[in-house]
Image (tube, rainbow, N blue to C red; front, side):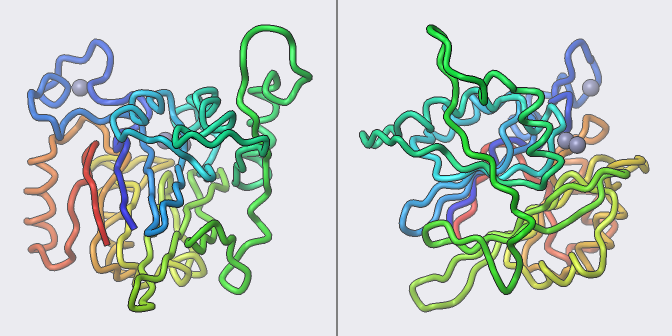
Length: 279
Ligand SMILES: [Zn+2]
Ligand SMILES: [Zn+2]
Ligand SMILES: [Zn+2]
């Protein structure tokens, strides 16, 4: 599995428009954080996108994304959804030269799918002349679980229910067997402020954990660094990465924070846009 961190920033994106703070004016590439999203490619080429925020188009160009087999949404906040129209190219044809009549499958929980239908109603209305639109099929993922995973190509996928303030959202766990039949798993848990014991159980011991970590200070709908560290400890992934990061700390300041708060023992790193992991 190849994981591309398309975006690792909070809803404003970093730099925040008009902000002159040291992080927003930093020259370091790791301090540019577009809206959070991740692209996952399997050993046989199956391509999954989690969330399409307002930066989706530039992220797809950056990743040279030429095929999407399914999109998983965490929730319907604008910073995770509002690039949905740029799925058009992937639902009409893939850039490997195959055209398809089949709609692109979109998975999430019922409230998120409902918001997509209401907010982007033109996508689901009869075709009018001029102006293309994506060809999408919305699928409620609540029927999938450990005993009955969603199978897409070489991947087995399950939703991981989370609370984001009072909002019920989905994290996602994506697993793939390698050539030696060993399972490799990614747990992608953003946005969140609370993870239940049942959901921790779903992702315990994942190979890679990506977790919401907005900032050091507490927030009502996101995990703070200390709260994220506590969940990382409970989940016990082999490697963990912070995402959905705001402009309070630079990349190097987060690394220093993690070194002083964990002594490096938990194998946590701040993710950054363009980071690629292969497992
Ligand atoms: Zn968000
Ligand atoms: Zn700033
Ligand atoms: Zn959100």
